[in-house]
Amino acid sequence: MAEWENEALEGRLDRLGLAYIDYWEFVEFMEDYGVVFEEPERPEMDTEAIVEAQLNISYLDYKLTKADQFNGIKTILLSEKAALAKCQQIWDFY
Image 1 (spheres, rainbow, N blue to C red):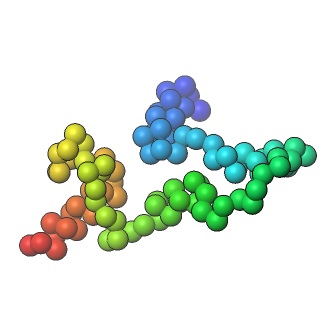
Image 2 (cartoon, rainbow, N blue to C red):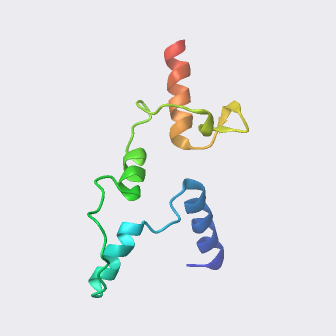
């Protein structure tokens, strides 16, 4: 992968909030190499599962919030899913 492609991918993951390593994923990785952490049971919904659940929400079920808006502008949205949800809202209104 070219350097610019790598930087573009990292930037995209950062914007999506996916450029991180989940703690429990790290624990699982270390267990593969014989390093065992004395941790309580893994919670049912870890960060990875929460993010995956959010990504799997249909635009029809997506709830728009102020966090989806760019600088508070209701018509400039920060994700494709938010934009589709807004289009659906407009369509349903008319």
